[in-house]
Image 1: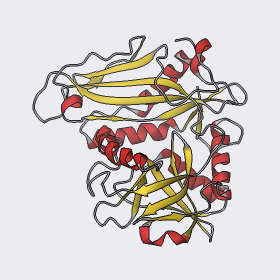
Image 2 (image 1 turned 180 degrees about the vertical axis):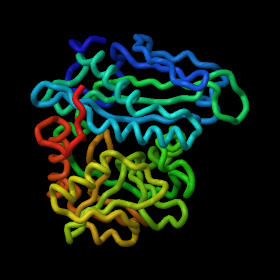
Image 3 (image 1 turned 120 degrees about the vertical axis):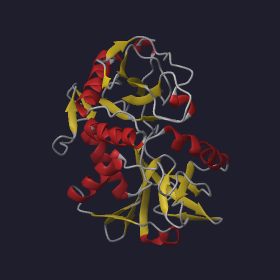
Image 4 (image 1 turned 180 degrees about the horizontal axis):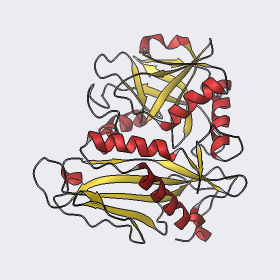
Length: 339
């Protein structure tokens, strides 16, 4: 599919086959040199641990067409480090940061025609992943692994601008207290499909997961990180070993402190003390920020700033971060890597 047939204005978050993807094999104790291939199908052993035992992890990051026409990758080193931690948790060989960033750059360059033009709000979404493959049947780490990166052009998450959404509290757990919550592994997402679907059936954007041990503290919003803004100009985000350390979250914490002068607090966010927040949101690579209008808990909807209007601090954070990504605002040193 050529980009001549892509309507940049109606682009959503859907799979589109792009020209080339990166593929590398881990065999005999080492990563083999990666190649770019036109083939978007993986041919793997039927006994692959990825298929049977969930031995796999993934990442998500974006390449942006900047204001000056250059191409920006946003903090790919942080994605590389997080994927290394996920691999370590699942006994998979780690992909060196240099190899990870090089693979991303190769894929962006090879598919440059799929990057949405500056001003359309879209980006080229990159999906790096590592899977356990090779002939196997027992519960053990795989004899071989694949590291691959493919890309898909995606439109702005919110068509016609950011707007608040309502969320409901889930009775399900996303991860176990000492489980894989902090790793970006497929099993966490498989577990979230049913709770998410139930929330959507009840006309909520998604569900919010509480801590698995006590069910009293907010941990994650769907597949994104939670943050709240207090009247005392504090930026509060949950501190928990089972929360995925989001790169958008990390970036917003730094910008809240250095650019907006907020006090950043990583702490427990008790579900029965939502009154402390004047604004709330979920943050992640896909939407950057999804403002939270209200949270449904025990049959009652707790509304923050408004169900229809985005709060001023959320608005400023969004503008600052997206400004850096698209090259309109100077970012902290090392945040943007040119392709």
